[in-house]
Image 1 (cartoon, helix red, strand yellow):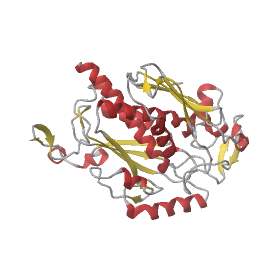
Image 2 (image 1 turned 30 degrees about the vertical axis):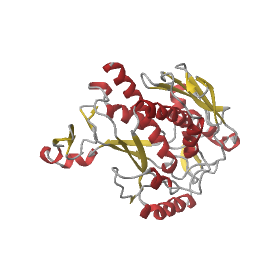
Image 3 (image 1 turned 120 degrees about the vertical axis):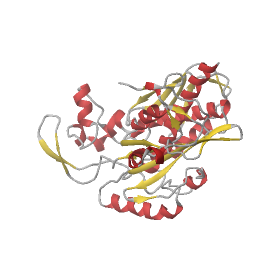
Image 4 (image 1 turned 135 degrees about the vertical axis):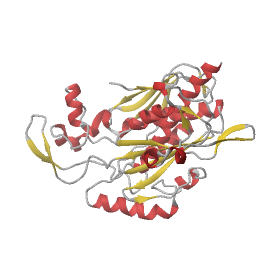
Length: 360
């Protein structure tokens, strides 16, 4: 199973949703980087269940333990291992799902590939696996702060179903995003989005949407031509997040409606630096960052597990029906915002370290 991500700053996540715990091993972190456990915990708290009325009610403190790789709060350059114990496990809620495949979930495909799976909570297919990613990215964020301070990575809920937020990536702040439980950057859309999620959940259903993300103050030169393009690694990172179904950067699919004259980003010199007068490229050209804001969007499908009856089959090949049980998000987007930020942070940290090794 492919559980490793990154080339220089590498992470390896482990654990199942209802096992003893989940976590991550980080390899390639530079030595002498100050790392705060409080900052790691802060990011895990943004991702954890039970944090508001519109997310899964599973009660987990998601308390991080650092087992190796630090001395007196400073990295040693050796592997850093972080674990979060699972404490609120209810495997009994998944007895029926052990033999019946949940439609649009990973149950059948895991059985098809491995011939075995952990049915409780989806095992490795659960979004609980992303705890390791968020913890690793909190360490990566502190690497960025040390080696290249000033880089900002912010994500927000752009849309839920047909409700669209109006957000300017150049000026949106973390304070605005975190001021509401939906984590949208548009205060005018908060109540409508909350009510939509509540209505969908009351109907035993689920809903999806789009998360937008901006990377500000990224230096030019990150990324590599051909197969290691910056946007290619961002796309892989985002599409590895559970429930994702689409990725676009800059003008994205709407750029296909423009001509080259309309789409090109003209250059100009500003205070001795090469800049562009528009940013339809989304901050990346030829797979390499150009110093402008990197702006991309990630599509999330409706949560697969719903509380209404659906047609399915058993692992023995019999036709049957299944209604979801357990505790699930009716909309994953509010809790996915820190996960999108985390994966972007991991990609940027990895490429920054790769670039430094190249120029030095």
